[in-house]
Image 1 (spheres, rainbow, N blue to C red):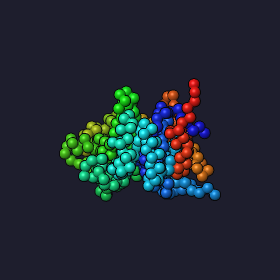
Image 2: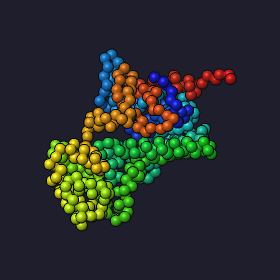
Image 3: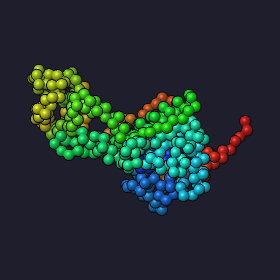
Image 4: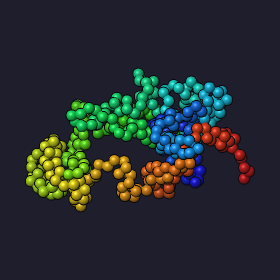
Length: 395
């Protein structure tokens, strides 16, 4: 396995003060593109996600967290005791040498150690410094702790997730953590370009709340447009129908007839041609308005055949449709395999595990895992030597 990447961010030096998900995910996105990402951890336990189950066990070499491994490939780990002045001196030198700092501590924590943007930018005016937090660096909730579920609740996202007559439900994927990670990585990449152009660094204040609201554009615009907060609709869509889940004779499936042509094909497939001319369903707006009635009519037909029969029928007619898979089914599906994003990762305890690699294809770059997830402090000597005491060869 190569320990270097040929990715588009190769040569970029990143210090990651990352805990749990949002910061580490941002760091991994940069590392996957080739950046040299140094994960700073405390020697007594490191990133809290290291203790999250499930664990990959190996005789004689201990256990390793599956969750931690999924967010920390392609990084190196340096352990720093923040109570040790020599460790802090070395850490500050590393930070000054960095092109990018990523951190997701509560606002003000790193400032206590003179490791905030205000201090580091004095010695490195080109530094790109990204702070990730729940509610932003200023305002009444700036120092309030946040996890994915609390941001899902506060942002309104939970209010539109779940069945219409049921309680608000948390999205099964920690979407607040990963949305802020994507926004952070995108903002960092843009700021790196700017720094190269004008020699000036950037401070990035990236909040989980703002990121979730940013990806909720359709819901916020619905509120701005009619003054009413969007509501839960289960699998249904507020402006389209039939665009939701149904049950076949054996299991659920989803169809998305998002325009009049596709709606016509649904009518043909179900032998309900009369619905196409029914004024209740003649336009997309009318179908959405009357979708409860429409769902009942269609469901009475869908239950007469197995889900796979309906899916085959809709595939032939070009109507977007899909089975409702669990992750075991999704990962084993030949369609997923055709994406070629499943990779094998070696862990420090010798265990090999499948993992989902960087999922975007780019010409001129082939994703690879060039650094296995690290042990705490595994790369202290290596990084200090490379970053602070490089060997200069005469040309």
